Length: 354
Image 1: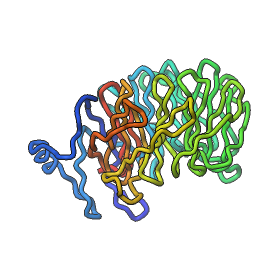
Image 2: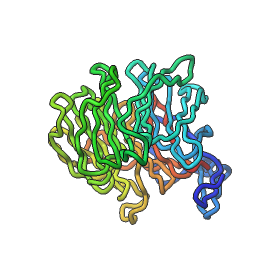
Image 3: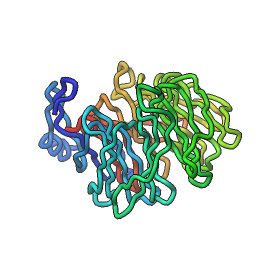
Image 4: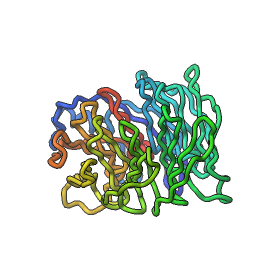
């Protein structure tokens, strides 16, 4: 297919096994090097890819992955110029179960606590769609309209998160720069809070008391108190903060900064950046690595970073936040947009496939 003058052969989800006690060194052993050369893929621009793992074809430009709490499902939002869809995957067997088309979508995806429901950002529809998961299919069960579809209302819903116990869904926007709090039971807007800059996504703390919002256009993370329903602080990051991941104990937040080659490591209690991890292949590399996805191993000791424009994952030991160190890189497909972890398996969406 042709997309904006670029010949694209496919869009894939790559999954592979890893162990957190293996060091990914700078030099590749001869046996592995031989295998990678055998599987080398040359792109039209002269770049070469040596992706590891197994691949699964997806729709156009997958940008985000949500993992169900049960670990049974993976959901992917496809956001390109072609068919926009939500793909449901059997996480264990790597099999596509369903892929309903959606008129407009952005990165927002969130499973319910019981893994029986999926909340989806409708992007420029300015609507949050609600799907039930029944017989391994996505069944549309309702929606929450934040406004009228583009161009009548200009909101652009990007990231979302949900608190099922309080029947709340939180949505941030990239056009009217706001946080919307919605009631899941009545499917209504409870409150709108201006953010002052374009928002990328939002992430609830493990205890659901705080919501962290990456402000792409503001170079910071806003802290929203879900009990008081107000912004109580902010933490300055580097340029274009986007995807985030939080440790199980809620103490540390990792924020990818797309416009520079870094991930900010934040001490939440101190509201302080402890360090900015350099994710590029070389420490003094110019901007252009484009980190846009982060995930932690199940023991929270290893951080995986999707480097879109380097076609790799950077791997860091973060067992001592503030003193992280590199363990090397893992080759992916073309333009990795997101990385997630289930047990000892990594899932990576490659926006431009192979």
